[in-house]
Image (tube, rainbow, N blue to C red; front, side, top):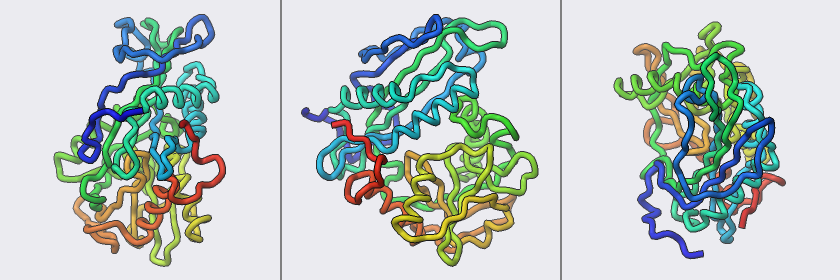
Length: 341
C-alpha cells in the first residue's frame, strides 16, 4: 500500500487523524460485534458516566515497520491483560482479551498507509480505551460502554537525541495506598496535570512521586516507571502496589537479565539511596527510556554520575537492545512480536 504523503522525519508526538478506528458498544449485558468506522467523533449523553464520574481507562502501544518490512506490535497481549485489570477495578465490563488483540490488529491494518517506514524514526501510536457512555446521575457504574481504538503516526519522543532530564521530588501524591495507582485509569492522569504544569513552570521536566504512606520510597513519575543502575551495573526498579505495571519496564528487566547478563533487583527503593546510583531512567512506551541527569529535592540537587549530556552506558545498552528487538534487528523472545502484516 502506498504511504501517506507525510514528512515522517519531522513528525512531532501529537495527534494526526487517520482513516479508520474500531468501535464496539456494550449494552444489555453484552458487547456487540464491533466494526471499523471512518467517523472520528464521539456522541454521548451530557450525563454520561465518563463525563460525570471519570469512568474510563485506556492503553497505549505502538506499531512498527521492522527491518524486513513487516508491520508489528510489541507485546499487545500485556496491554490486553492490563486493560482487563483496569476495567475490573473501575467496574467496567471487560472487553475480551482476544477481541482486544483482533481490534488492535484490524485498526493498524486499516491504517497501514500511516505506519511510518523503517528507519524514519517514527511509529504508529495505538490508543485503545473504554468509557461509560450512558447517563449516570447517582454515583454508580454506567449501564452502557464504548470501546474504541484509534491510531496516530508519531515522531520520536526526543528530537536530536535523548537529553537527560531534570526532575523534582513532588510535594503531591500520585496515588493513594490501596487506590488506583496500579491501573491505567484516566483519573490518575487528570490528578497529575496540576503537578506537571507546575513542574514545567518551575523549570523541571518531570515529577518524582514518593510513596504516599511514608514519603520515603521512590514510586514513579506521572506517566513512567523508574529504572536505576548501581555503580556496579546492577539494575534496580522500584516495587510497589501503587505503581503502574509498565510493559516497557518489564521488557527492559528481561533484556537486562537475558540479553545483557545483568543482575536485576525489583524491590522497594528508599529515596535516600538515589544519591548512590550511577544512572537513572524513566521507562515508557513513548521513549522506551528517558535518561535522568538531575533530581532536585527542595533545592538539594542530586546529580547522577551519567551526567547531563547523554544516556549513561548501561541505559544506552538497554535502549539499543530493546529498540533492536522491536524493529526486528535483534531476535525477540517468543511471543513478544505480534505480526500484523
